[in-house]
Length: 467
Image 1 (cartoon, rainbow, N blue to C red):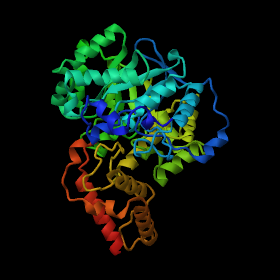
Image 2: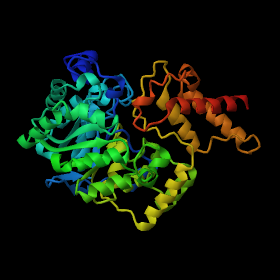
Image 3: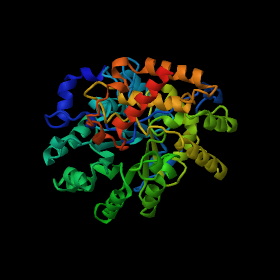
Image 4: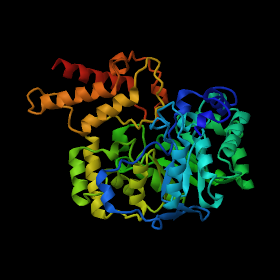
């Protein structure tokens, strides 16, 4: 049965998330933890059946045996065959059940969701699928996604937490997160969780056993991160979710000046023996489709493995990583990721050096560090910001952005770029419609100057069209 047809319509359901007030667009599309899926190469099927008893497990702070691959529930499939993160179509509950069954059969036991995922329906779809299995066979991770100011009150936030228990059909949550700390800085953190008494309430729920592990997800700079860790003696963080991949390990600042290198974040957590969850292992999907230079290096080593598998191996390589979260809409994504973790093969020093060289090459390209979280949407002028950025990045990776008219590759590259842009971005939603109202900028966790980047892409498109 489609999720949006269960007892209430979509608008009525979303209203309940904020105790009667609609969440903002940013809140409804928040992407901590499960914002991307693997990209499976067809050749990976030649590797044979996926074993059901080879999943890599890591131990949590209280002895939990957690699968290194965690299922991100932000991209559940719809009856239209799309991801529920982008589509208004009903969630395909039968397909969600099938994916969950297959994941559990192959050893995945962590499922990460949020009241904000899938336009507000992820927790219910996840709860329906998981409730068909013994409660002891899986761990639930969800979040207090009280982004909208009208959800900052004690009652509104507590009601959101209690609805999570109801929709997930459980009387306890294994891993509960304060969602998106660092965004909005210290004042935002205090107003959402501290001054209203909500964090003290959650600590009491942990003491009562209704929350088994309490932590937070982080987007931001090191000073805020250091402050949150300084509270460890008071709040005893059980785990933390960070953005971590082989580019952000050393080069986060080059991708985005306000991001923090995951090497620093991970190392500081390791010092305190705080287990780590990973989000954005593919950096918004961009590390699943690298340029020809990187792809050729990876394929020379393991021709049948997907490009994405290397990013997942890096994301799980450090022993302090408890689980790597991946949003998987389609069975082929799930199967490809399972091949990486069943069993898990740590990277050698030589392979780590190769990935660092690829990261160096990656940041030399003028890519937009968009993770397709859709915090910026909807644009009041209808601009399809994530698709514009994704199309631009894809063509950069393919070497199809050539602006020198004397370059022999100019003509073919120009034609391919313009065709791709026209096919993927509707004319009335292209970058030239941006009036720089700046409404999108405050919502971007990557701190992208969105109007500036849209203007740059538009100038490139106009130059190529004239050429």
